[in-house]
Every structure is written in structure tokens, then in C-alpha cells.
Length: 332
Image (cartoon, rainbow, N blue to C red; front, side):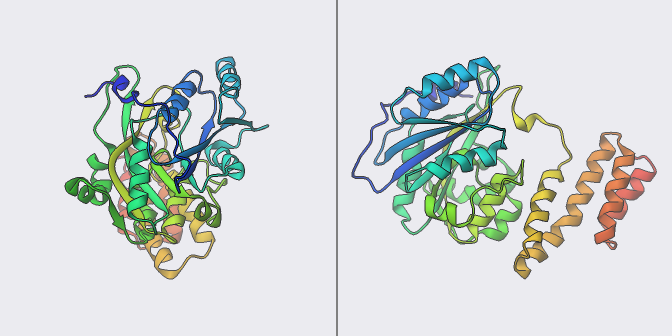
């Protein structure tokens, strides 16, 4: 395992004013406390052939005094702009608010409680330079345990589903290109909002993050972007995802719940047949996954409700019928 402080060394945020990569960096912030300052510092430490035009912090109606104090200090830092939402909009709304005033031709995002690694932005820009017709560049990331100080292996490279995409890049030790991977992006989130570099014009064209989604808003965006652009995958950890008690990902929910809301939203927009068919193939499997999860949580009544809900649309699904039988018999 690697210690956290080794990642926070670097330069003074060198800016090349002649660079074609003029970047606006958006930080959504809600009660991040002193972690926010470290996030900003990790951005200002980046060096490379690019211009960090601005760091836009969007305070999503924070309430704790520590965060408010750090926000006030950040507002006095050159090239840092602090915006304050009058109500909590969630991650999608906060990021969109920042983009609405961004002036750079490229966008990058960093959550207020996470940090970029050394030269992470340079790695994304170098890949964008190598593939000038691609509008979405994505790197890897690592989990950082704030209690133990340990850092896990690169996430996308070490997970079975995402390793199928990032594996070739790591094997070749260079970025690789995926051609319009929107069907893949429907079901595999091989990007993270804090590890991407996105062309601003394309972000605006697809409508940015959909604020109707509280979760999976980033996964939904990758699908929309992948319909319009190839993706480039960079075999490098771009940021550290800092684990702490307030992480949104700590919430315990059935595995298909958030994905279902995203897929329902896509279906409501009458997608092309290939997309709709792929969603309908996935849907009964997701319902079965939820029912299985409820059974193992001893929530048999909820498992039964989940199965009946799924059978209304997919009455011939053997997976759902199997889960219904298990729930009725109270098999874990």
C-alpha cells in the first residue's frame, strides 16, 4: 500500500498561456470542512502544458462552520471563484452551476473531499493531445482510507468489469481509444467524474449532468457523451477517493435501485432500438439482483414486492420467478 502524502508533492500550478488546453475545474462542495483546502491545493500543484484558467467551487448550501470558513478563505485565492447555491441541488446541480459560468474550453471536476494525484491533469492533457478529435478523456482512481492511511490498487484496473476496458491500456502502458462506446457505457461505468477531462462544447451539447438523478448522474452523462464521441482511457490513477463517514457511497441500498432510475430516464426519452433492447435485456436481471439482495437482508416481503413489480413488465423472466420462489419460501 502507498501512503497518502506521497501523492501531494508537485509544483506551483504552472500555466502555459499559449496552450490550447484552457481548463475550468469545478468543485461541488457540501460540508467538506478542511478537506476542501486539500482538494484545492492538489489542483494548484498540477503542472503541464495547459492553462488552469479557474477553479470554480460551488457551495451546495453547506451548513457547518468549518466548511463556511474554508470557503471564505478560498474566495481570496487568485483564480478561485466561489459560488453559493441558495438551496442544495445535489452533485449534478452543483456541477452544472459551475459549468454555467466556466470559461475554459475543457472541463475537469474534483469533489471537495478528494484530491488529484501528481501530474494527473498532465496525463489527461497528454492523452487529449494524442487524440485531438476525441472529446472525453478518462483515467483511473484509487480508494484512500483516511483512518488507516492505506491506498488500494487502481480501481478500474482491478475490477472485473472495468478491467475489460482499461486492461489493454495498462498492458500497453499507454492510452487507448474506445469507439463510441455508448452501449458499453449503459451498464459499465468506466469513468469517474473526478478522473475525466471533457470538452466543454460537447458537455453543453448533451445537456450536462441530469439534475433529475441524485445518483448515477455521472454514469448517465458518460452514456450521453459516448453517443457523440469516442473515449480515451488513460492507465493512470488520476485522483484519490477519500473514504470517510460522510461519503454518499456509504448508503446501503439494493444494487439495482439507482441504475433502474437511470435506465427509466433513458427509456422515457425514446432511445434508438439498440439501446432500448439492451435495457430490456438488462432490466429483469437487475430486478432479480435486487430481490436476491433483499432476501439476504431478511427483507422477504420487499423481495416479493420487487419480483411482482418486475413480472408486470417481464412475466417470462426465469430469474425473477426463481427469486420470487426463494422469497416466498424465505430462503436466504
